[in-house]
Length: 105
Image (cartoon, rainbow, N blue to C red; front, side, top):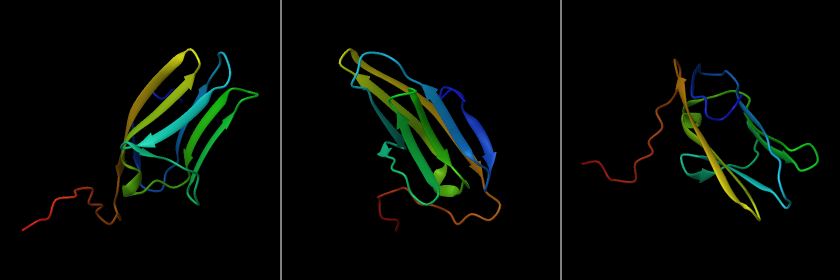
């Protein structure tokens, strides 16, 4: 799916974005969720193959913390391209995730 496509999914569904990247090398691909750099983990896989030019970000079972703005930054000696998409995770059994750094009184 092209990253410019926002989507609404249910809790535990898969989130997947794939892009084909080409251009002068070296190419770097960096994924973000709500401006936090993503790394591969138990539930998330972030990959880029310089050989095939395929960049992927997959979440195997979406939950509340997977809700938000996904962004990919692709750069090479010629410049930088950014694409974004918003993913809404509809949670039936989610524990609320607080992203605020302000203290509540």
